[in-house]
Amino acid sequence: MDEICTGLCRLMVDSGADAGLAQFVSLLVGVLLVSGVPLLTVILLIWIERKVAARIQDRIGPNRVGPIGLMQTFADLLKLLGKEDITPTAADRLLYNVAPLVSFASVVLIWAVVPFTPFHYGVDLEIGALFFVAVASFGTLAIMVAGWASNNKYALLGAFRVVSLLVSYEVPLVFALLVPVLLAGSMSMLDIVNAQSGMWFVVLSPLAFIIFYISSQAETGRAPFDLIEAESELVAGFNIEYSGMKFGMFFAAEFLHVFTNGILMALLFFGGWMGPLYYESPLIAFAWLGAKGGIIYLTTLWLRNTVPRLRIDQIMAFNWKCLVPLSIANIVLVSLALKVLQELDMAPRQLIGASFADMLPATILLLLINGALTLYLLGILRRRGKDARREAQAAPVQFARATAATAD
Amino acid sequence: MELNAISIGFVVFTIFTLGGGIGVVTTRNLFQGTIWLMVSLFGVAGYFVLLSAPFLAAVQILVYIGAIAILITFAVMLTRSVTRIKTRYIRLVPSLLASLALFLILLLGVTMPIFGGVSPEHAPATVASTRDLGAALVDENGYVVPFLLASVLLTGAMIGAIFIARDDTA
Image 1 (cartoon, rainbow over the protein chains, first blue to last red):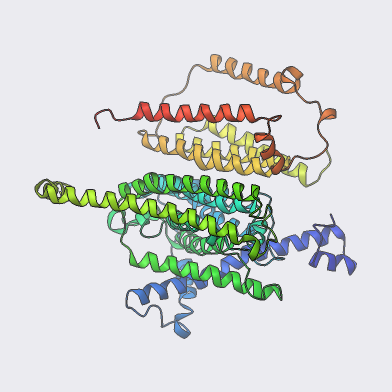
Image 2 (spheres, one colour):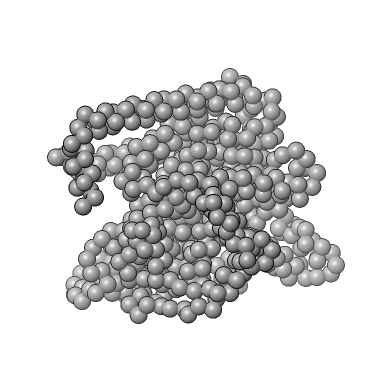
């Protein structure tokens, strides 16, 4: 009981409050904070995303409501709240209304295991990394249920695409996630961050980071993987029948998910709150985490606004023929190399608290392995590309005919 | 049973598990049936949490709800007219007998020490952690042989599925 009752709770007990009540209140405050922070962040995120997208597309973006358009999202929020709440008569009423809630909850729940600083976190689960994957699978479920319950062909087609896309990209995502777990020897997010005191995991295995980055871009359904709601093909995809705040919840869940992924990547691969002077004050640690997560978040926005959409067969081929084998090869090689180095006493057996010098030999070897794997992959891709080009040049007539047939 | 957080949780998760199960067999709609199945499986995940086995709870959600149930949903959505099933299942007596027999076998298997069951007095005092679970799976005195056999079986099943589903004309 003593371990649970710390901080605010201890303070209340010391000033004469009932122990049970104090524990309840402090837990309640914790839950409200952990769920409240992301809810408030998302309002700002929508503004940031619109501004960034506008700048990339050579526009100005929201600039009328409030200073530099900061109040735009609040205006949108009011508009959404004021809209008529329509449930189609042919829809499955219960499932139709539950889906947006599950979708948003699946993202907010991830924040329960996010450690903001070494001392401030919702809960330090023994299985933090696995918790993240398990909770994220609820997001897939929500989109699926929304697509089916709307009783609309476009929504259903969108949902079909989601299932194939999300279930497929979950495989490389989990394999990439296993690399930090394996290096840290723990699934707890706190341990994973602490294990990066010597060296960030992105240096130890950049491939794992790249795979995780690509897969999480696919998990959020952002370009080039945005065929969930390909406007030109599906009108709006799974959320076509939703209006008002129910649509707003899907919208907010997606925006928040992108930022959450940025924070998760900062925690898993970029040492979380680690940075100069982080031990001085929790605020500095928090700022480091925010800065790292923010930079990764901005690159995903950049990617989203600059690349075209891929076809579903291209996406599937890329996942199953490239990402999945690569992620498996990566984890096998990393775990083998780490074990060999530990047996040779060239790498610390416990990464938590290891210094930069301890990690140097292991880092160099792991980096070399990752580089070799990348070169091998690039060689294969180049050969494939050459073959495809030669085929296209050797048979221009058939190629043109095939293209024309697809266009029909 | 005294009223504390664990017993309240137990009641809630039992309602989830049994309610979901009842939902599965009573709904006329296949898609809703799969959703009820997920509710039921979620309740089982809750039991694992109450039994201090968070790893199993997460795996339960990840594998059963995140993968298997979603694949079932996918298959259900591909079948035609899932929402308007008119025919009723009429063979009630055989199915009642079969489910009763299964229930009895499970009940006996759990309560009687046929398969080397552990009585409450002999249950280990320490709660096994995720680390212990992982160690037991690869320990030669633990479950390394069943673990490897299961892996081989799954690989075999996967290769078999690919072989059956392969398009011979390609």
